Amino acid sequence: MGRTRHPGRRLLGLIGVSLLGVLSLGTMATPALAAEQNGPGIEIKPGQRWSNSDHNYHLGAYMVGGKQVFCVQFAMDEPDANEKFEPGGDLTTKWGDALSPEVAAKISYLLLRYGNTKDNNEAAALAHLLHKYTATPRNEGDLDDSLPSDKIGYNVGLHEAQLKKAGADGDVARLEKDAEANRGPWKVELTAPKGDQAIGAPGDWTVTVTNAAGKGVADVPIELTLTNATGPDGKEKLTVKTDKDGKATAKVTPSAEDVTVAGKLSVPADKPQVQKAVGKPKTQRVVATGGEKEHKLSGKTKAKGGKVSVTKVDAKTGKGIPSVGLRLTGEDKKSPALGANGKPLVDPEGKPAVLTTGADGVAVAENLKTPQKICIVEATPPHGYNFDPNNPPSACGEVKPGETLALKIDNVPSEVPRTIPAGSEPNVIAQGATTSAPPVAALAAMGVLAAIVSGLVGFVVRRRYGQR
Image (cartoon, rainbow, N blue to C red; front, side, top):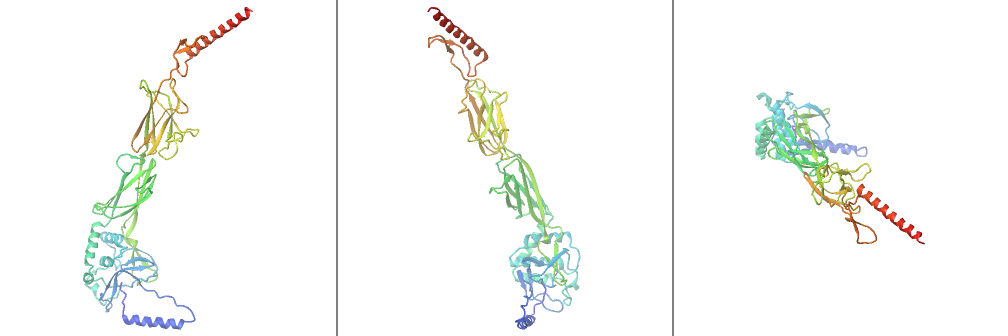
């Protein structure tokens, strides 16, 4: 803002451009003349005087290189739309003095919060506050209207009257109050859920943002990136926003044991930075994103997988059966179950992993993926119990987050007939209880019996041949 606009000069400029256009016909096209491009704001008519002249000007944002910026050296030349800028260091007053930490913090917050506003009154209010904070007269002499543009101070009272006339005085008060309340430095904290998180079960991660006074800052967007976890929509990236208390909650569901939540947000910079026009010292310096800096946060936790406890018991006595091999499979009883990391649980041969019951007949598998339907299938039959390899005993259920799935497989002791056929009479039974896996003594008795029978058969044969 600050460049004088006289109708007569504009007319002469148009005539000059027209003449140049006529003279250049048939030779070469003239490049388009650069001009300032106003962003949202209001026109100040009549404006403040300097260099003994009246001025009308834009109070608000400008568009430079397609980006919205605000000026911070009142009355000097406005930037052109295609102006080239370079870093200009810390923002100072118009006279080069350092800003107080409080004022610098207010400006940083205002640029962070309102730098991209599209509202005319809000943009005008922001521009007004920027000039008020950086070009308020140091003494009465700074408002002498004979001073040149680079020396004149900003007439706060005149501009506040113009803003009130435009209906923007309420915006000025609101932005100034907001800057005072929520200026930096901000404190940002990321908190993991209380207690252990379970794989497959959502937990609340909290981001808290507080201002310099220790109070929560509302409406702060925070981008989160999750590792081995997903948000409510099943994706690994999400954006949350703080509430009136400065807290933002993200529901995070672990998909594996090691969970990381990383985030970033924009916070007010300690000292706002300016950009200066390349080769044009009379052009106002501008601020855009110079009022903010990126803040990163990160947190980790260990999520627990599901758990299954299976008990192998005698169907008659209810006692646990030790040393029984049980395969941990999927719902189909063939494929392996999945671990918390999503990988199949297999033995060295690539088959579903085998659990072995302890002395109490119990086997436990932990850190399983949840939710997941699994089956426990008997792999090695216990000694002395019925077993059908085509339909082995099994038990199935669903492993749920944070819970232990309890399963039981019982086995019925196997018994062979209590008598053994002897002699030629089919109904004559020799007593002798045994199991499906005959003990050594039973086998020995059967061997003796077989020898006796064989001897008798030989004796009968010899006797028949001897009588011939």
